[in-house]
Image (cartoon, rainbow, N blue to C red):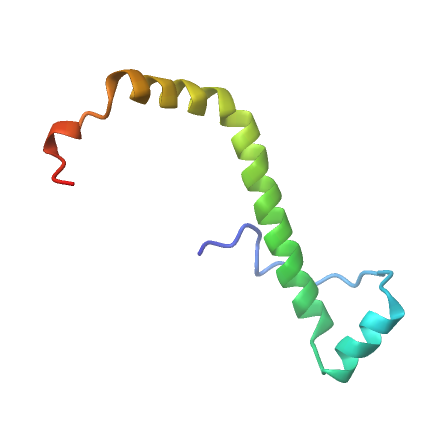
Length: 81
């Protein structure tokens, strides 16, 4: 899967506020908090970008779906299923 951000970009120190008990438990489990956050944040950005694209293209998608409903697909006669 293609990354949605520059994975070679330099790391930047950031201050965060996190539930202290959750942080303690993550540290007890020796989780790499930066890595976990980066993965979760990348997934959230990916989902938001997808939603943004769907919103921006909803009219075109609707028109395309309507055309398919009315006219079918060009390959309908070729299907064997």
